[in-house]
Image (cartoon, rainbow, N blue to C red; front, side, top):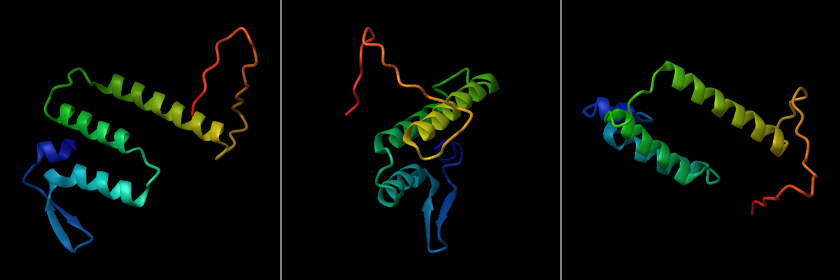
Length: 110
């Protein structure tokens, strides 16, 4: 998305068959991802496109290396915990214990 803002005259070659303006690339990727991976979050990817435009147009200031590395760390932590919680990958060094204290409020995800 940022590339489409910074270099709007560039072209994107799709499999050597079709050449489209780079300005359409974020939305092409959104549609392509929705078709190929139906479980992918449409709203999540759309939000990423919107934030990409905001960064590209300079609406979000103060994004230095510290904040970029911090965000990357939190994203990596959330990714590892989701893999562990779903059972997709078993990180033996990471243990998630269920909370069984009835005094705590419970949250159910549907």
